[in-house]
Image 1 (tube, rainbow, N blue to C red):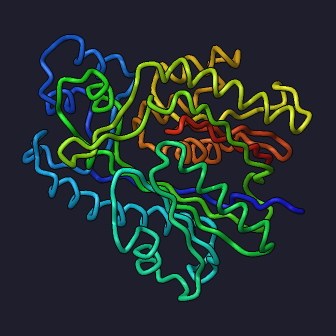
Image 2: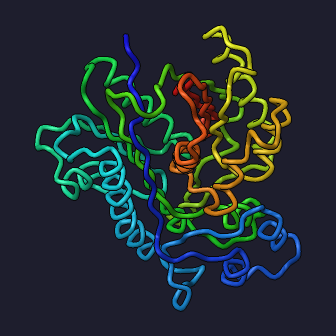
Length: 341
């Protein structure tokens, strides 16, 4: 069966862009160890849906929920509209929409708001993927790919929207300080369907390591979403990326040298470092992932689509080139897809 292609990818961020120095000042951390998480992150700027004049690290839960409700759907609509424009398609051309987020809850859900805001058809099919963390952009792509395999010739829209500033907590935990130093707000959209442009999604693969389930996710002290981010992720993540890449390559009879583009989720400096070493990659192989981390930080599920957008916008892919796209998330899970231009 012919694989669907990623026809267009587009991204959106809140208008306010902060330097790491500005965010360190807003965080109110004074000790050297927590300040180091900001200064040694390899992140230069992040976009956040906050007003520095009124931001309070101890703001009430209602304010966090209101931030997600205001900015999550708006950024989703902005990214999706841009993807449709890049593909030169009208909203009525979309047959299936997949939305995902892990940083807020809405009812009606994000997909229904997007259907309204984009004026999609009243009979459009939809699904919302929730609580799958940084890997859920890949899970959403997988759901879109499955739909298109079952319905050849149709088109699917994937949208990941994350307002990580709606999950801000200030406490004594070192892992909380790490989360506050790297996460940011953003949305990304991918349009899939028949065509000649863009990479084909050849196949998806998933790898679970349930013994590491406690390493990543959310806790909810007092009802506030608090990101759980163990320092062991960098080691476990590198091992899982290597294992998943090995499985994908073996399934298609490919050698690692066949992969020209490594579309790796920009989880953090040390996660990228460990993945690069485990896979024996050149620094040039992770330049797109590092570039997204440097300019935007970690936007959870949307981040890997930011990396894919950067690859596609570079003009470097040639017909026949392979790419390997991977992200890590709670579960503990690694999600990957083999691409070919």
